Image (cartoon, rainbow, N blue to C red; front, side, top):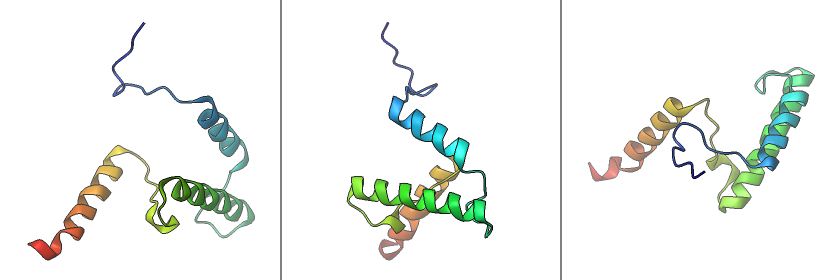
Length: 88
């Protein structure tokens, strides 16, 4: 079967699923909290940010995690507007 509707669901590689399951099992704290569980979660997220930045050859502070599509789209649109402010 050839499945072309990736808008509905995109297949995920096993490594990504394994990483998610490890994080889900071990990162129990809010990454912005200052207790031990939050600090551990924040450290794991920063490691992920560093790895992603390395893959894309960008600075870690250029990687932004969002909670979903609407927030991602809004962030991208705001970035475009901000970057083009000199041309308006």
